[in-house]
Length: 277
Image (tube, rainbow, N blue to C red; front, side, top):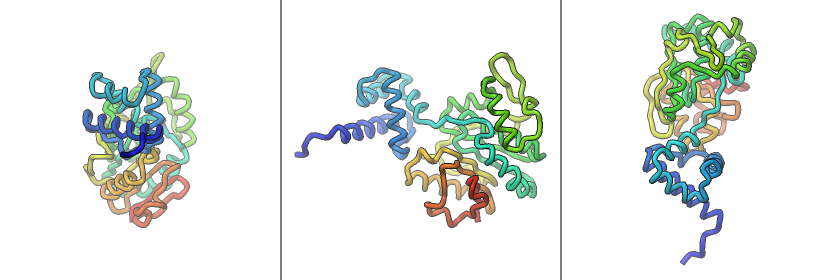
């Protein structure tokens, strides 16, 4: 008979059982997310809900209506902003856009879109480059709550000054305020910017390809996945990209250490834009 589990082993087992309970109750599988990230979010939820142990959270998943939705929201990555990392969008505008001009139709997938700021940024960029009327943006996330928010095109007014700075640094040449109206609390994007964006639920862990794209954006998402899941998602993106299509990843992410590095050229090494060979 094995000696009693250590504290660390007991905590790992509790987390395994919690993630299994979440999966059985909701269908969302977080087992291949980085364990350090999951543990931080669990610890935060324990503090917020004053639960004594991870095992106590399992009980709440099984018996407390609404608690599993809290955890799914906790585990989802919802950090975003308009024209985040402006140099990335500047590179896209100056280097990728000239090649997209040759296409009769442009299909772009923003995977892990959260509340939509990156998709809105792309819509503005394409509008300024005269390509938006022949573009379709598919913006997906696993979290239905953030997708519902994204579809409204409403942003906190107190973020617009920061977004304006990003926009100008990314090569924007218009008055950013022309793209939205305001009241005392919110900014409302012009309906014309939303017309070619489709928001819908898609889970990178479990769902497959749904179209062929000329551009796929998945920035600062895969850092939360373990290496096995990263490989699986990269296969999904490779299968979903057209020949010569572009993949944009986050500044802390790379394809160099993966099997797919030989299937792309480093179109812009600094800004992590890859071109499918």
